[in-house]
Amino acid sequence: MNTTDKVPQRYTYADYTQWPDDEHWELINGVAYALTSPQRLHQDIVFELGRQIGNYLQGKPCKGYTAPFDVRLPRKNEADAKVETVVQPDISVICDPSKLDRLGCRGAPGWIIEVLSPSTALKDMNTKRSLYELHGVPEYWLIHPEERWVLVYRLDAQGHYGKPDVYGMDEPTAVQRLEGLSIEWGFMATELSPVNTGLA
Image 1 (spheres, rainbow, N blue to C red):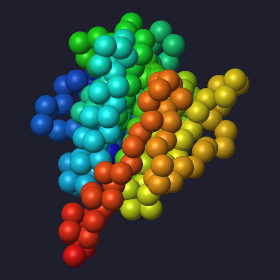
Image 2: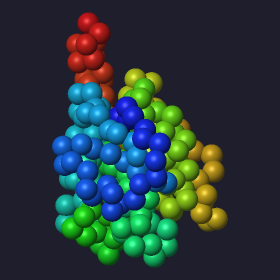
Image 3: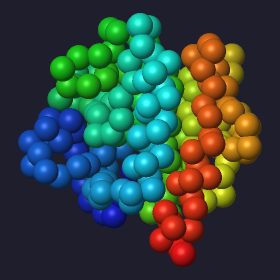
Image 4: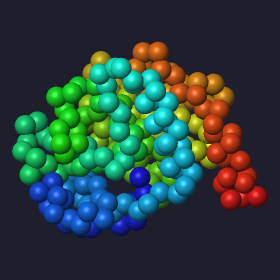
């Protein structure tokens, strides 16, 4: 996600639902972050990852979604109107159908992916990492397009992420939550060519 502004006031999901449809926001512990449109490269990567994941999920109970898609993270049985955290991960995979409703997802997805950009890296690697750990997201991937690495956090038996695994993109990366799925990175060679990145 691309974040350009943070509004210093506490908001809830009740406030969030009243904001204009043509504006995109995230709430993290009541703080509102404005989201801007991501760059084309970011969207190319999200689209290809979504394609691979979608192909794998055909005929399976899990569902995959790309942003904009609201993920509400309540405190225990907190009513929707009082929820102070609503995020829009680049990709969310939910395998518990009881978490899905007409508004999006209520509760932690089984797998979240964020594609890093200069404007979001700190939030994705620190704020969201802590947030997803707290709410029990079992598997959290951070993708760095230019450096070509994938940082993977997985919850341990105590419910903590601990030290992440770091993978290069020279070979497929297995998804622990989805047996038999490995993400292929060959497309990155084309997407990050000098022509496609505007560096030629």
